[in-house]
Length: 453
Image (tube, rainbow, N blue to C red):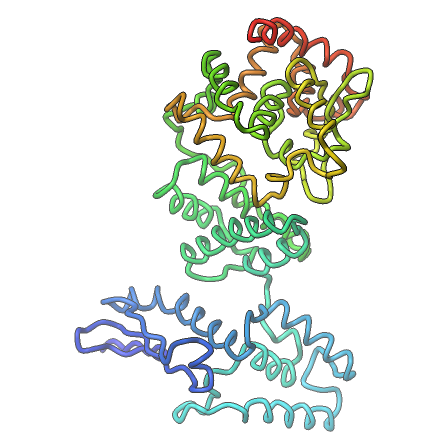
């Protein structure tokens, strides 16, 4: 006869389903907002076994968090705390005690910890014991190495986000949201907090397929790039062998090619926007600068007055990281000459600065960039309904114009802030002079601005 399934907190209900039901300690009910954790794990024993581990782990974490008044530490973090505790109290880390007196004292302390909890009447095991207390009891009786604590994917996310803090509060919030999303997705797909060394190629593909079920390949790829970065960083920080489970992932080809996602704007739409924006000086000036420099809107919205050099022999704008603004990549740092309408706009901005720090104070903070985008797109949509048209399209316009003017490719990339390649060619030399960049931009805009006056 087949043995009956025995899982803690699980019983078969009146409908024959395997139901997890666990009472929340009364002292934690107000904190957690529930009196019980209840979940149907499945209709069959196989389904119940598969669902039990992840849900039981979730409940354990919730109860631990309630007892700690917030987020709880992982076993890796707890183990580091144990090492500090043992060193401070001069306890042997590798056994239950060097001497009989030490063994007795450690047993007494372990019993004190256990006696804080209500014991299961059948097993005698303490109910709802926290991970920290459970680890301490294990370490006291058997040594720290008896505590199983192999770094997991959640440990890797914690250390990555701790060490790679975005200095901008708004971008930090976005960073936490983006990385939190893929972390939750991984835990849901894998159903367990996998150790970094145990994540397989099959696990990586399962996560990729789960993402592809509800998003475009390009979006799935961005999500997986985040977890790939976390895994690489985690393996390095925890001194583990590199795990290449996410390397060289393949994705379905999307119907729309990358170059078709954003199309250059037709000349009549560009001209119409110059008229449309006459009533909003900030929008007009940003539009003009994007059109004539190819800079991204985020690079210009947080621009400081000190970065606009209109009195230089070659008037230009300096695009670099500051305390309040980062750059997407290192090669985005550059200087771009100001010509035509862009120079006129820059001269006006500087002359009217009146001691202020930012060129566009209304939009300078990163949490205001979305407001700028909404205001700009509202006006652009009056002239084009094509979703492949946006103000970012102006970068494509300048790229095409530089190409048509037969400007050398490396000079085009220097103006637009694109990568100039890899290896030695990207690291040698001082780059293109302002004069060369100015000559290239004048080829494009001297005639164009004159005919649009």
